[in-house]
Length: 273
Image 1 (cartoon, rainbow, N blue to C red):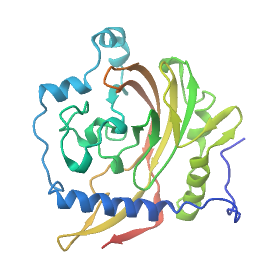
Image 2: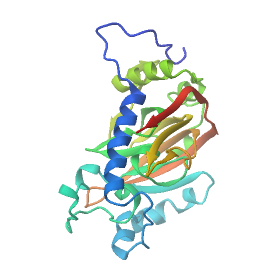
Image 3: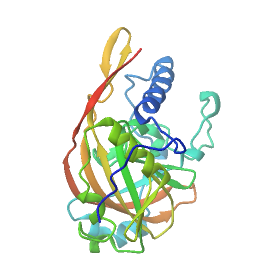
């Protein structure tokens, strides 16, 4: 069996206009960012406090040192957005999240292998769930169970179906499949969705397809492509939740299985005014 070929939705099915929703979100987000003067903000050098909020536990550093010495592996500590919100943009000194890291270390880009704002990330943690995020991005998550990261390959059940999927470059087809993945679907013995509950000592598979494209916004009269500085790739990754910290953040080990160029959407030029 192969990944589902999505037909036109029936009137009863929810229609998610992915790109329009993304653009509205960006417009709201960039309006806030511009108002606060953060568009071109250069983040300061990390404080000891911030470093401690993204540090790997000493026991884990020792246990997984050999794994992390291998190519295409890494560690990231993600905070839950539910714990990181400042009301009315007033900094809460009791907020457990790092202040001077993009997205407050709630979202991560496997494509760039660093923290990013949600619109340029692959995943984030929100209300004890892993969610796929990102502009012009189609993705699938699957729960692989208590499987060792090093024992997983592109032929592993649950991963094989994901990476063999050939994405369309037609935005209408992409939106239909996103709509299906938003609700979740089962293929063979695996379940795929755009968000899944976080479970300790559990391994997840991710296919993240960040389509090439241009999303424009006018900033101070200048037309800016929001995706201009974002690496647009198609990556397949497995990651494991190894620890929940006292501050509510999660320690995550990851391993990249495949990386290739992402396709370009046919209908990709949009201008935000």
